Image (cartoon, rainbow, N blue to C red; front, side, top):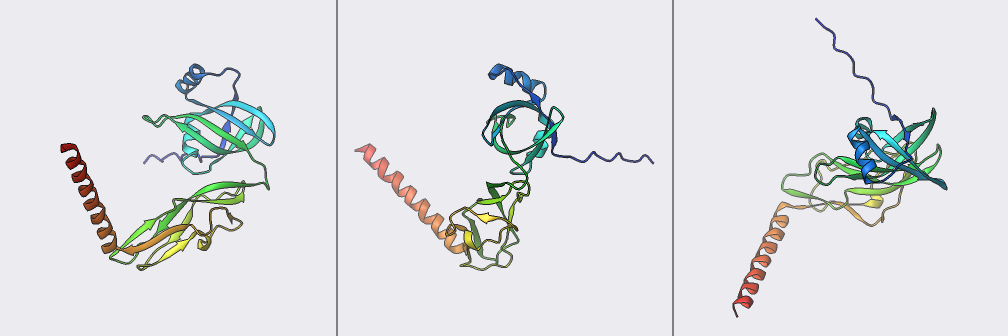
Length: 212
């Protein structure tokens, strides 16, 4: 029986190649070669332009607020992914903005909010905030914030200030902002029906006006 080869462990180390030519044509050629144009800035330094391996970086970007360990001329530089530009149709990464970070530094980032569990039967879960802004250690940014709604009943509401944040994190979002609320399924259906009736009435009024 043949043994399966273990897949190499994915690390956040990526080789950064310096770029000296710019423009849409140059960026297009880089993408054809399997590379992504990036700009690195921060800490008062001039913007630096690099090309990164597209395959490795795409895998690392599956995690929100990814941190890359750039290998620049044999030296290591940590960078936080700040903005990712994608082709709207093909969803191919076209450009990335990176920010220099250092050990011990704190940064403000938007963290995805993930709901876990199921609320009581006959209720509807309304998630008002998909992310929360927090301040965290630059090299220990939480991947997501988990909120357990298992067994929660109608009338349950959770404000941003009541969300349990990862250790060392500080809330930056409006503390009074509603993150998740639970209503009865009946109320949700009634609201939808009223909205549909209003839309139908509006269309009827428009039709009547046009016929005059």
